[in-house]
Length: 173
Ligand SMILES: [Cu+2]
Image (tube, rainbow, N blue to C red):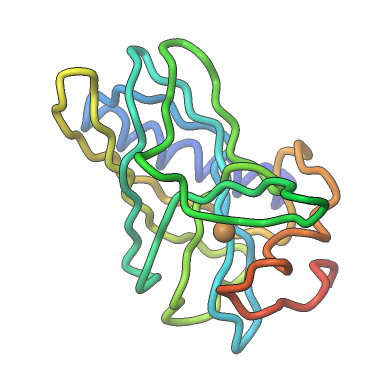
């Protein structure tokens, strides 16, 4: 078995275990976080989320990061900018919402240690449903240099334009 598919299998197994335990309202697929190098304080995490019923991702937390936020990356006057999604990320019922390099992503900042390729990083998502009820969902994200599923687009712009964060070396290693 190839290491990559093994890692994906482990990540999926971990995800579904947690999903069962929490009777999760949101299905999360292809979750991964980008590996970091020593001294790098921030990185992105990516996944595809499908809510059974309409809900909103209102919070993110990780014991590995001092600060975690949902970010959006978009072109503004010809410049790629990144900012926290205000009011949370809306997940319409039954519609897959992709968090991917160059778009929505989970930003892990103030990293307590480098995220090594092949390791995992715990992330807790907080959702608020239409009635205002909050629920939490825990994930173990696979740490990788590039998207494990090949859904990735060239990630050269990933976070290097972010004013708040340290520039990172080119993604290729
Ligand atoms: Cu960001």
